Amino acid sequence: MKIRNWKITPAVFANFILLSFIIGVLFSPFSGRLKNAADFVFAQEENPLLKSKAIGSAIDIQEALREIYKANASSVVRIETEQVVKMQMNPFFNDPVFRKYFGAPQEREQKRQGLGSGFIISKDGYIVTNNHVVSNVDKITVKVHGGKSYSAKIIGSDQVADIALLKIEGERNLKPVYLGDSDDIRVGDFSIAIGNPFGLESTFTFGVISSTGQDIDAADGINRIQTDAAINPGNSGGPLLNIKGEVIGINQMIYSQSGGSVGIGFAIPINHVKVVVENLKTGKKIKPGYIGVSIVDPNDPGMERMAKELGIQNMKGLLVRDVSFESPAMKAGLRQYDYIIEVDGAAADKFSVLKATVMRKGVGAVIDVKYIRGGKTETTKIKIEELPAREQEQQ
Image 1 (spheres, rainbow, N blue to C red):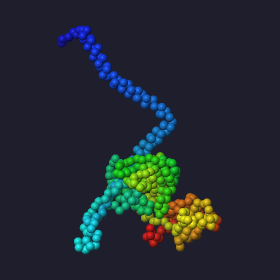
Image 2: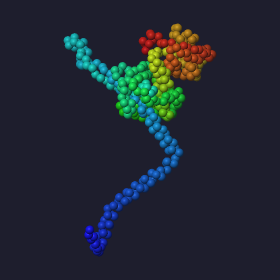
Image 3: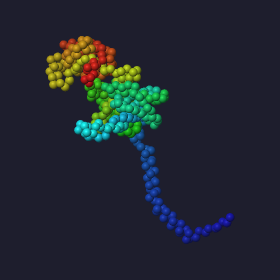
Image 4: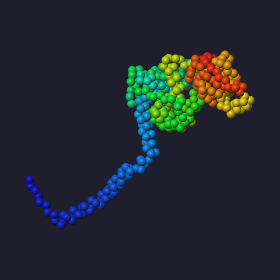
């Protein structure tokens, strides 16, 4: 191996100095950027907001929301439905003249697909959803988040309450949700919706309870929960949860003029759902309850005058307009113009309070009714009977 001896001449030294100067000029902007980057990282490490108790509390809430999603994502399912409908090949065949000369119209089958949500309530595959998600369909497929697809069958449904119970076979270790107490919620409580809006899988939205006891459909008597957590088509049948990660309702419908969420969504309280599901699970047919009273609309123009004559001004309650002949209410002694102030200990400030109690307790149960007659407070017990067939046909 040869070693060459290098000599540093004045020319070599001058060239080295010149090259060093050029390199310094070229890289000086980058050195400034690196310095600023180091300062930026240092500033983040010294973020003063992290010392704030308020920020710390907010971070705790954020962590709680992450845990709630993690705990419930695999319990909320995607429900896909398929329905075969027959379509006429040509709309002109609806014209009787065309039918006369060309005969009966030809039909073709078309598959319609639907989408909704649901949630698992038992390890062996019972699932709750809305009745309108699975009503009159030919095929139901349940998809677990990040997992398998199952064929499901309807165990039973309550069309009035819009609740359906499904069952998938072949599994014994599914993860059910935790059921909460919908009677314990208050306006301002946190609310969380998980579902599959517009086909998007396992979407999580967060808001508050906007109102409770919303009787938006007097016919079914359900006091719905109102929430501003975003609910959209595809969320139907999914759970509404509290900050503890417990289900407090089934997301059912939205108020919207556009078809999308405007921050007004409604859920069926889980306490009502529990009663319906227990009946469906045992194979009991849901029979509509009946006590046989009609109530004066609180907004009736003559209500103020009637209240004054009956001495019930400035009192919240339900004025009985009529009592059906031989109805449970008549048998219990209730009469026209009685003023109902309590039902099973709850203030009867809305008709839905009475209707919901009758629905929830069901045929054969007894409700306690407190009312005012002639200035005196009276109480009676009314045994709920099945709604007569003639009235069921009218509904």
